[in-house]
Length: 482
Image (tube, rainbow, N blue to C red; front, side, top):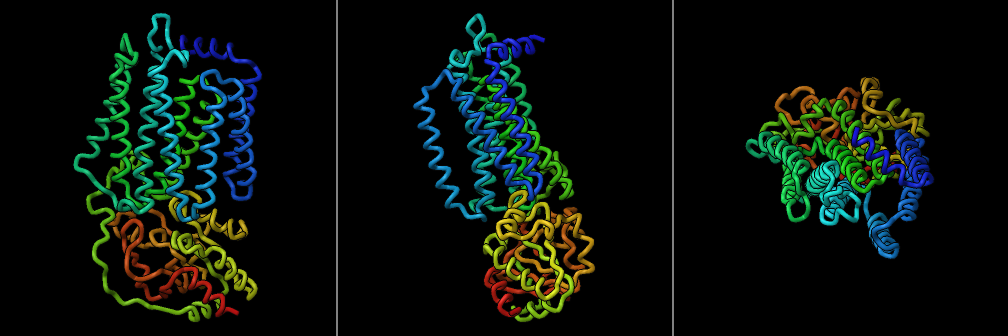
């Protein structure tokens, strides 16, 4: 009841036009999420998001009281220059690690805001009559700082794994679950103690800094045990964390827009993570608890196995594709690395001109982040009605003459259905092996997929390996189709 009265009194002091502007911004953010739920409306969704953010930023600048407008505009200008430079130079293959890096910045921003409020509570208006920080504000600061710290350190590890600075295989520490749960429990207890402390100012607030340090450690410990097969879920999960951190800081700052935006990002990210876990037959709690349930062998690439396989050429592939009635194309991260989406679109145009039915099959975790393959195909102007999700296309592989796999490994690996010792066991995969012929483009037979598992599909009788750079191989296939 006291908390509700506090919010009501704070709302009463805010001009009505400000509340209305933040409400309009919130509606724009909701429409943005709605638009981003479909490729057809994604551009419109992005526009709604930009309009909502412009309204929120302009309203905040018009009502700011702490920093000078010159300082704020200078900071915005520096950030804009850095952001534009990165956006122009970044390759699509590096987009997942860029997203992880941005999540880390959001997390650190939440920690810095909480630290500023802790060091100068009077400027934030969170002091009680006795000159101490309000108990509710202490909880908001501690939670915002803790979630932000977890987001920061976890995102740094995710970036390192995605960028190749760390192994994509799980790094399993002994007693990791006990350590993780114990540290989280300690953070919760210390937050309660900090909130109940009679004097929690800078001179008496060691608990605040201990909470931050413990949270930084938790973020590190939670992400390093998670293997490459689950990394798209991690990116989505960290996105959710960054939203909740922003929402917590919105309460500390008394900023309605931050609360609305953070809650939307946090809840949508959590829902997306849950949906992806279901698509991968993973436990949501297991993934966010740091790879709970994985054994020490998970992700072990092991020695390469020298086994016979059937190798083919671009001419062989062109003949099989040209004679087919139905072709299903499965793009993966290898296509992104080779930037082969445009020439792949050219190949599909050639096939359709010959009367071949062509469809694209997208696994929920193909690539390194949610929707990675959809973005690449949209960039190449592949029609949306030719792109299908796993559950909508999997039953059609048995009727396909050719399954054309371009750089997708783990999401086509039959071991997920048969090998209980595999780290990807139980993950639904695309049934490409059921097609009459599977054409598989791969640079070489050396090396396993991102999850560190060799693909049994390579050695099947109906599989033809096309060993070359994906873009170069597809270009040669296009020439052979002419």
